[in-house]
Image (cartoon, rainbow, N blue to C red; front, side, top):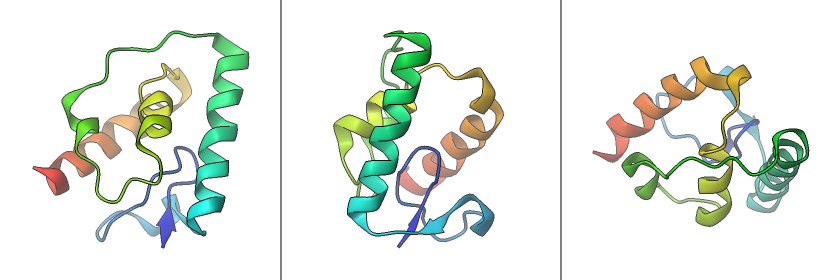
Length: 93
C-alpha cells in the first residue's frame, strides 16, 4: 500500500510515486498521528471546517485523524495540499 508521508492517507493509482512510501496501515496511522501532534505543538488548535472532499475517502486509514490533519492550516504544505485535494476530488467524485 502507498501512503502519503506527510498526511498519512492511502494514495491511489495515478498519484505521483515520489509522494509516497511503502508502509503498513499501522505505520501510516502512527505517521499521521505524529504529524498531527507536531502541528498541535507548533500552532495549537486552529482547525478549519471540514470540507466536503474529505467526507469521501477511499479506504481511509483512520477517518477522524485524517480529518484533523488534513484540515489543519499548514502554510508549508498549501500547494501540495491543493494538488492532493484535486486528485482526491477526481477519484472520489
